Length: 357
Image (cartoon, rainbow, N blue to C red; front, top):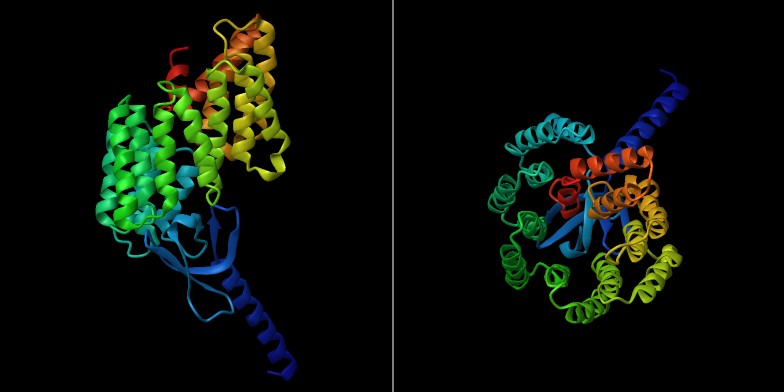
């Protein structure tokens, strides 16, 4: 082979190696919004996450509580890939089977991720007791799983969906205890405090308002928790009859959208719509005014909010606004939104309300 040919082969081989390396690179998404790219994650647990950055020999670490998501892009087992395909197709039962099969022999990240996906599928199928068992199975099978706090949070979500608020409160209190015992990180304690306030919001709106405002300040390092608390402030204003103040509050969040993520802006649109229909008997005109904000959430942010309760709220309230309008077409469109709400969110309070329509 000539020197020129050898040179060309070397260039091609080098390019293929570089491409393969890029394809295997993982990504780490932080709660602050930053994404670490071109890394290889070597281990993750509630104790922390370790990874290697291309070009840097030394292993680096992160506190697990700072990590929103890890995206593994390397080779996956065929059953895990089958699970992802079934999940994308909306076949939750089949996805759960594949993820369970993938997790059984796995010794890498697929074990905890597979078991977590099994539990998530069961929860989304409204098989709440089975989901609770599945979350507990993950905690037993992978005692140091990075999903440790998530499991407690999801178990409490299932209990809330079962109309068992006292059990949910006990689970959130357990989570707070585990934060200290396992050093899970402040975010989980803040989130548990937020959920406890949320559960008691209607019983003591004044306490909830103060609590949310305090949480917003404390959770500056964790924007997701801070923003959830920020949105609930507006809803408490509605409960207290401060409609104009709440409307301006949500409008200000929407105007500040460049500094907010999708969920926050969509939540503000939901809040804005809610200000028009908060009284006991809204007029047809008020239902009309509320419709645009809910439609904004559904049709502009819907793809990014799949599985998020904000979308469920918009679907139910958007359907309610349409149902208040005269005309057969409006009634038909309202039923479509109710049907979608109960189909996609069977465990949500909004899905349960839509099932009654």
